[in-house]
Image (cartoon, rainbow, N blue to C red; front, side, top):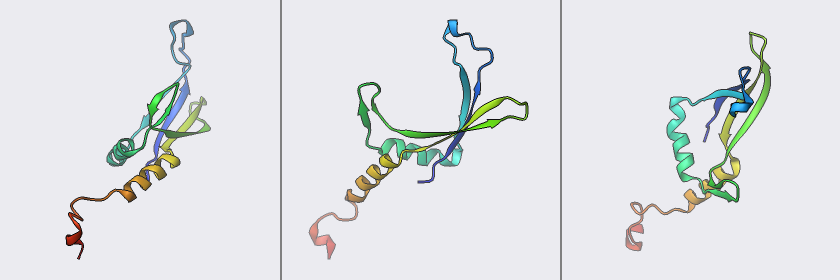
Length: 109
């Protein structure tokens, strides 16, 4: 699975903390060609669970400090599937029997 979703996170210079506005904002750009693969990952992953988020699917986020042409500093972000979830869903897929392939033992020979 080769999913890599890039984004940027900029300091919100107009942030009004008294109105609970975010200190940073930005976007992730999901390439349309990767949407089916991302959806498959989200649908097939065995959910993790904790007391804070309940059941959830993990996505890894990495960040790099960069400077825009305007001189403003920002974080360049990359979101990828979590490797432990990928391995778990792959192991599940490897042990799943396709009913169309083997209908009964007699069909095996």
